[in-house]
Length: 157
Image (cartoon, one colour):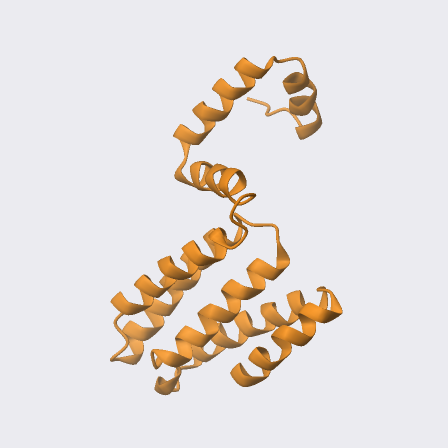
């Protein structure tokens, strides 16, 4: 089966009325939890700008609290699991400042919960790669925002 291009889908959607579009959106949100989360943040994010960051931070904080970090092997596996979840959640927002906030939160929690004390290469590389992602995002932000986040990145580095 050949899937049509995005342009073709846009064209077909333009022919639908509001009720049909609403039904398709509801069906799409039922299809996948990610679609539902994306729709939730798009609808409620306009009224509450910090909602996305707050909910993602709460979710990641819970994951860090439940993580097993007493041994290097378990710490590595937990950190990788939390990073996968974070990357999945990062796709829900296109706002670079929100993405930067989540990445910095992740790095701060890795330090706070002692993941870096194990001197494990995988954990250190994971930490460094998230920090470098944060630095790349920071370079693309407005100068005022860069100033606000620069100190946090320097503390983590």
